[in-house]
Length: 296
Image (cartoon, rainbow, N blue to C red; front, side, top):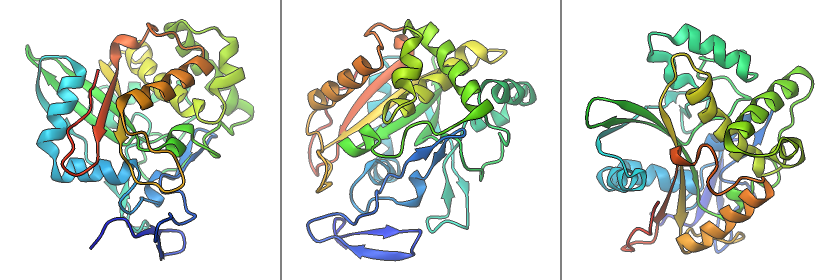
């Protein structure tokens, strides 16, 4: 079967033909916060979009993906394992992404991490995999390093401009105590990154910026709030040569870097911010037979 002719819409249980143009549904979904509600699993692009491509790379090109991730990290990695998603029979795809810091549930200090996370972020049902209204991850990895150390790898993937910009749904929509808690966590994160406080409410809560901000906030929690700290890294994965008909699909790492630089300028994130040594970028080409683009 050709892979660029339709998109399955979970909410209507229908398959929409896509002859030259995508269905109206956004394949990647979006977020609305009281924490965050992510609908990424609900509309997977049929042959396009980051979730489709990540599933293909993880399912059919796992060794190649692991090699590229290892190269992007620039660490002495001897092993990379990926955390399985939970099952959710209520969804057409029957899967549920890993949410919040649920990947810490296997740690012996989970109760302490859970309590600290709930105080840090409005996630009262932390640990329940089928909950909504909290940010979820495209993938979670566990890196094994030579010498015996291990670290978490938090992955956020994008394939075209709409996913990156988050239009129109990825602004924070929290209010009341939840908003107060989120702003406090983002402000603490901004401090560690060397970002002025006024950027938090002026841009970090806005469309597109908010998703980036809450990813950095989770990394900040693991490194600076969790006790004992949980070594972790954040990997932004950008696919090139996606095939979305209505949105620009970068064809090179340099195109993605321009978009990233523009976003970081809006958010007042300096190039050498305080979490930069634990933030990584990988650019993978989805075109058949194409070589992977550069990573750093």
